[in-house]
Length: 296
Image (cartoon, rainbow, N blue to C red):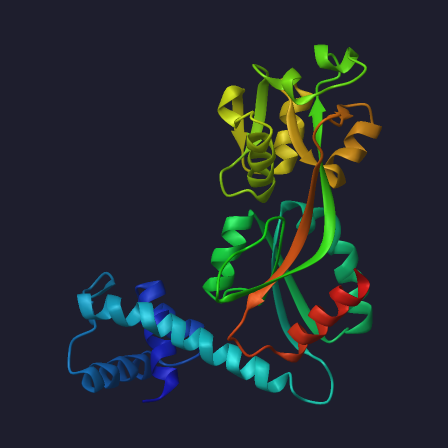
């Protein structure tokens, strides 16, 4: 079976139209119809229902659409990785990162990496640690950089840098005026937190629990999906929070929040590079892993 038939089928399914699929693929409409007919003959079942207004997938067509997208993506990755084994390091490098490394650490590293490997096309998507892990397992990215370790037999997880999580609060918060702060001072305070899949939240919960202060002993004033939103909420007076020093320092220096540490509890953590153990790594991926480890 010709792979182009699957590509045509995917376009028809996306556009719900033979004519729009033909235009996207630079084919004639009869050619598109022929590809679909050949696919239906190959599988021995009807894949699309065509009406005067639109095209709808049959149940069999829905199943094929699910697998066809993965097959096409796999073939594209195979082509990219094979091409990458030419003399020069070139091709695509897809990286997923959690908020702190994605916003504050990787941009500088990637700038230096591109100077050394200008033919590598780098893309960076930033989300939380849980989503980065999911994207890696889906093979939507080649490398992840996250703020919490991963315990999975299919994922290689290597420490590459360190970070400190600090306490932040509004400028006029009562705790600002205390000379020293300890964990007991936090009990009953309103706190702004990241979402459940956040690496920062995971570390904070673990450290507080070890100090016999579970997160639910504080008043959760709000749950936000990014570090920037947490910083803005604290600046607005919604509550105190814990964020990376990487993120807090600039805002604190501008006088918009106050950054403090606890005398009896330090929130240090490591940052990690993750990639799939059993997946063949392209030359751009090998180059990046070597580059980031040497530079750390």
